[in-house]
Image (cartoon, rainbow, N blue to C red; front, side, top):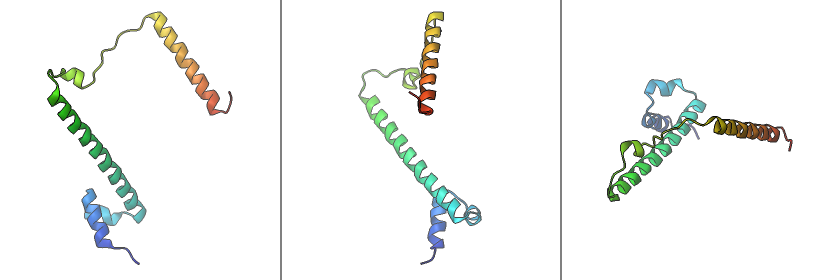
Length: 106
């Protein structure tokens, strides 16, 4: 059984490739582009579902949150010197544990 070039070209056009791009690709490159298009479509479907859910949820609230809250922008604060030192020490301990685990040491 051979390749169905018309179907492959149709799939490539559906993915957004041009005819020239299709004919310039190897079958492996076309397969990779197809896999990427499937992943992109799944991501877009998840994004669309997320948007739809939030639109529905926002219609049910009595008071809309501010755009800043909705966009998830968080305010940061400066750490005290003691807290900065404590967090640096925690970070160093985590890095050390990660490096030990990576090299098979306990």
